[in-house]
Image (tube, rainbow, N blue to C red; front, side, top):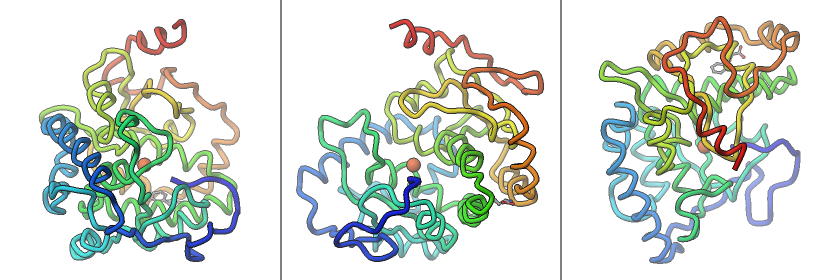
Length: 288
Ligand code: PHE
Ligand code: FE
């Protein structure tokens, strides 16, 4: 994830903000936290996570106990799709984030959450970044999508349009669902790395599940502090890559600026609704 300030890298980080992962410095407790999170999530995800994500977990050998060593992981990933995983101390500035991504370097937090933060933390840690994101990078089509997104980020900065491009990231990379032959599946890293949301996103009657539409997604607000109230469903990764690569976003950004944003949970007349949510969860949170 990126933040929006232009600041210098913290002491100890390189000019591209990377740091050594220092794998040998993790404590046994930190490795145990990974193992706890891993066991809990991997039990839940067969039949829920997309085929691509499950395959990535397997081919990257992420079930090996303990926090993964980024060097070992990068070696496997490099052979499959040309991606690497590099460590950063936390959020990095947008231009740094996009430059790494366009060059197939996935920036991952090297720290892990405390044992009292198993269910939620605001900053992406190594569990979210590696367990959530990295399996998808083993998929050749998704790997191309994310690299294209990095180049799209550089372009969006020139057009002052990160608000719109960021929503695409949010509703695909972080919270995306895909329609597979046996039903809806999760591929968004924010969902697969969350114990509660990996059930909520598929099973709960509250959220809307809408067919992905590029311009619609780019107009849609999102919440960062609670479960999503709408998820967008892609038909395939090929289709996601095709529509995002073939569309010139510059004129799209111009037209989006003329249109109002769409509040979370609002359905519009052009939507293809897959499941219409009750929004009960959102209402209970608003009144509670
Ligand atoms: N086609 C986009 C543009 O014109 C770039 C992009 C590709 C963005 C893939 C995201 C994903 O800016
Ligand atoms: Fe993320």
